[in-house]
Image (cartoon, rainbow, N blue to C red):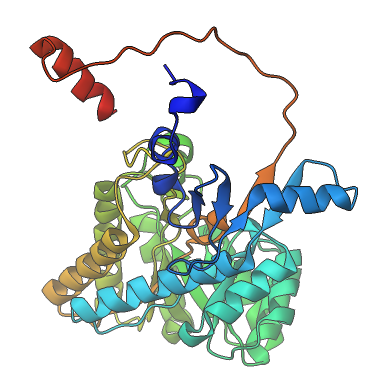
Amino acid sequence: MNPPANDWSVGQAREMYHIDRWGAGYYDINTAGRVVAKPLPGDDTAVELSAVIAAAQKRDLDGPLLIRFQDILRHCVKSLCTAFDEAIARNGYEGRYRGVFPIKVNELREVVEEVMDAGADNEFGLEVGSKAELFAALALQDLSNALLICNGYKDADFIRTALTGTRLGKQVILVIEKLEELDQILRVAKREGVQPQLGIRLRLLSRSTGKWADSGGEDAKFGLNTAQLMAALERLRAEGWEGSLRLLHSHIGSQVPDILTVRKAVQEAARFYAKVRKEGFPVEYLDVGGGLAVDYDGSRAAFESSANYSQREYTDDLVQTIGEVCHAEAVPHPNIVSESGRAIAAHHSVLVVQVFGANSKAQRTRLKYGEDEHPLVQTLLKIRRNL
């Protein structure tokens, strides 16, 4: 039961709404009791959302309103890159981190350009899944070493466009998600006279839970199983194009709430990488896909709307697990690629909608409890405080 308004504090509001958890340092409640955005964590700058809404109303802009904070977007990119760089340094890892941003997460030009600019020092790239996204990425991406990873359905026009990017010196990687795609890519590449840069999506046995559980497991729609992977490798070897295979990709869901699931999947993918390297294919990149979860409800639990791990735990587990497998298998450490679009873009935008109605409950008297309560009552109070 909520206490009366005159007995309500900012601290109680923070505790009730868990804003210090799901807000991730970007959102808070100020001393006036208003929600504020903090575009620069660690800085005193704070923007009252109510002030932004009032300014919009003066311009005759009615809700729903989507408010975007570019500084938060930039900070999320830099925070992710820094977390990976620090994990690599802590674990003595010999590869680099090379992130990519899936354009489908947010196709606004301002968002894509901000992500690329913020991640320029880490040569942050893009991931596309359609011809429209591919055209946009080729036009926007100006870093010669940044990756442009092509997933999704690939017809002859898509493949030709990707090969044009390769001819222009861009790092365009066509990811084979179904075995039949390989024949079509090789056919178009020979006709165009361009040796393609290829990746292969692995169908891992590991799978997540929740809405995106079907992205992994042996019944997953996309990815090559072990037999299909060996067939693809033999085909590339027969063509003399072993050097074309540059990346192995896996993806078990865009919101993986349990860190143990992440670790298990990455370990399996790293084993595949090690075996492919031993087959004589100089793969440089291991793409762990998406999965870095956002704690939407602030529960910090392994629920589909939350996560039981921090960004540091995520990066440390990835780097450590891949490094351990590579050390055991005596193969070079790959550069790590992630497609963490959700974690990058989720916090930077706020959707504001009008209140059309409200349900109210009769105000009841708040009971006061002291230290001399019955032990059972004290136990119940302790449980309530920790919910």
